[in-house]
Length: 320
Image (cartoon, rainbow, N blue to C red; front, side):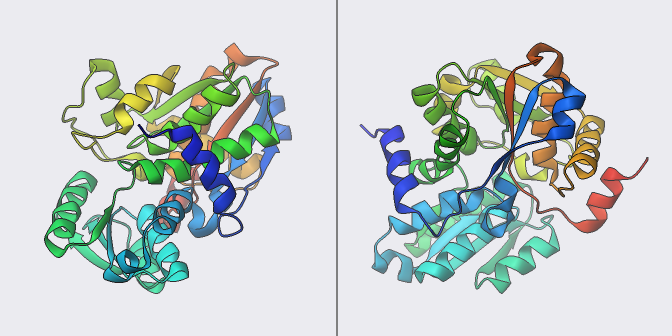
């Protein structure tokens, strides 16, 4: 049986210095405004602008040279694809990324600039995952899921190892959830090394695939709406290993509206001068929503990424 914590601990040591240790910074103004000691885990400062580089790097380092040269296939709306492309470039692997046709052009252009090849697929992110996985089987290449892979999850979990080292007595951590790999990795670490820390899972009201699965007790199709949090949008694979992991590590679930996400993105631009993408705004919005329950407590908000199209960002933070 795999020991996920041990795999995370190994990745935490083996991935340096390729994967950055990102800062955990106390936000002076947000702490004052919310009445708690609020820390920002700045994973938007990771290479490629999101936490995804952690999992991508760990997965590729564990492949053989032959597997990397034969080629890997990923599916992504942008962040995972960028991360796989850069990791492949650094480690000498050929990368193809299957992406939904609706994916942001700037993210797809970045994947290509990093040496990855892009294949566009009609439909949503889940369909891109299913098509990409089928292509990998047919072409005898390694498929790298954005979340449904233990070695990817182990890489994402290195963020949790860093947080324990940086601030070992956190009362709660707020993490946006898509497929569940990020919170599964971080949660596995915190349950082992800081069991008092409450793991708060955060979703936009418009995209609740994993939330709905957890509420129902099984994975099922969920109709999602457009959301600023495109990084967490899309369905969950029927056999996702993240589902039981999320059941084990998540202590609390929170939904936030699109207006609350926009407000959070504006707040952090003002208070800490950070540009963040919608998924990071989800975690901060949830922390703002629950702040009355954490007065005087130490809480961390994980800023998972900053990759947002400029026009979309300006519209989100504008006074509308």
